[in-house]
Length: 475
Image (cartoon, rainbow, N blue to C red):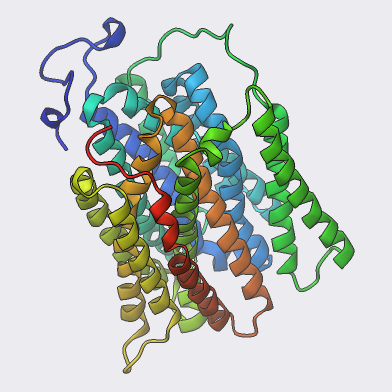
């Protein structure tokens, strides 16, 4: 993408931006927000290669080590809707800058701690900072990119696979040649660079006008947080050999999760200013879009995050070799996401979703199967990951634009909700997978069944795509 392809002010035409500001340097702004999204996506995968090292160095169980990933997802799920509302209330740039600061400081503290409980808490704080990136970055692009905004947000889909690709490689290098702490320290120079560039080049927000702004829905926030945390605890305790709760207490905790989830859905339908607008959750078009994002985005991502651990458990690969498996997935996803963005106005949304969902399911089946005909495990898993990456890359632009074109004026909230669906799917698959691993005599075989189950889910849910609102052209 270059500036000449983007309608409206560019660095070369000298047209002023809104409010008499200097021209918006669109490509540079896109690169800055993309760097923040890259930093956030790297941290969703880089820790996967360090799970074994964390378990040994901090003398903890696989479930607690897995919580360093699920706590990150939990922080995202809780803070994404808040970040979306805050972006619309306080300004995209202000929330973006604040998120960078929180994420960078939390990363530093994660690298310094030596206690698994503290690390899990800091990972949630880190995610709370990173949760502001997607809503505010999407809002910045929608506000300043004019008729090119659909293509720009479509290209966001290629950023996350880059993080998924390089995260495990850096993680493997740090674990093999330094320490697991390096997976957090790597964010410090990136965060400082994003902060400096943002202050210089991202257009300032309009003056604050908070008097008419509605109060935040604190009850809705608490209900969602309790439902998610209780559900995650139930799944985690099920995976412990020495469960700290009795079966009756565990059942009560599960009941709390279900009750709070039901209460939350009723609450947002009845309150005047809900935490998440019910229309964006289950309104016409949005309900199907959210489910597609959870299944073909979050569950697929969560499954592939655990691929390095699977390669170690089943085939005895070291951290670096296991981490490189995701290179094929990332490269394929980047390429296909870019190509799918370029033709999205012609294909519409449903055709790419059908194709990408089917390919992702095929890749998961191949991951679950043992290499045939004497093929090497590394090559077999790399090919399977490549197929999953092609599928994810085809799905990304369509699933992202399908929600945004329904209500562009609420782009920050919709982007936050999309990422929330991703993280919810990730939490589910990682929590269930670690529970299976903890109870399996042969963890590699147990995890293979998890991949087989994910493949079946992806295939069974394909009919859901016909409920996605079809659209061709710009929005």
